[in-house]
Image (cartoon, rainbow, N blue to C red; front, top):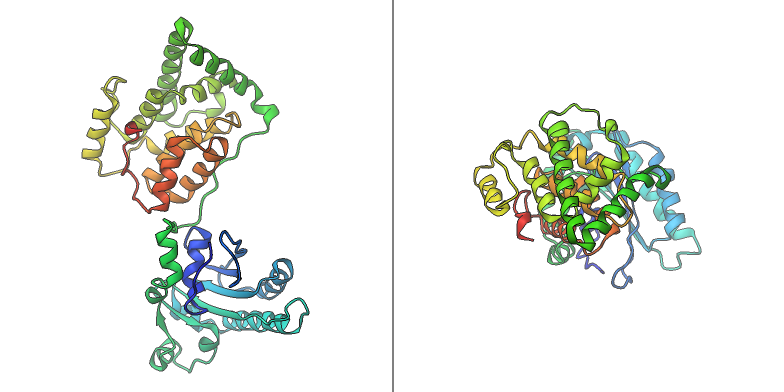
Length: 372
């Protein structure tokens, strides 16, 4: 989609929506093209900043322009304290130099007949200031800058037309940068587990006595795994053989088993759990939820491990892990798990549900899975 920038610095508030999360302790380079049509690609590069902005930002900025040939460029420094950032003159000089070098590259290079603009600013998500204004500060730093009226509220930028467009489209940045979910293992390694999953799925799909016996086996496999690795965490997941992992992945294809696993993870009281009336048990957990269950972390660890052995077309383990991560507020990892699940099966409803909850900024624990 195209975005309407009321001012060049609206890009500072737009960047978190383009990234999908609020960058922190980082410099972000964002290419903007006012002539772009719908579904335009906005190249972005984020560079982590520890103590101060490194001089390598200058070369990185010029390489970024050379690679993507943007019409316009915005540099945003996102930190924790605007006062500390303004006091860091060396970092400001680096950013100012990078912006000037980029503008000269725009002005001089034949690939840019209509010279684009380059802007740079810094923010702590409370207030913001342009780099050029920050470099012109007096001896009292931020105090002088506030008095001169060049420090503005970030909230004003966050109400710009571009941000309103994102909100209307259902986009909402996550608070933190995504934690990458573990990718699947090489196929040669997980092939035995995938073969077990395939054979088990055939039994389930064909129905009959074999399907009933298969479901009983899958129930027992999951109950055993939950007791061994979740109720009493610390077990070596590497002790699971590939056949057992194949059964566990197949078990998650059964909605009742999947919901049982989720309910087990979000509830500390599992002694009286059964797979009869799952909806009422979810209601009970929702009514008394105050603190995260001690089962959540080991359950997510188990699901993550099982997911790495899953078939390319099997979304279940990643989707369930994503749901649990979303439940406890690990939105970054939830988004990554959901991405992997949707790549396996774009129509898998649990993954789509979590994806929509993340986009709408719905807090974790707000959806009952058994209603699917």
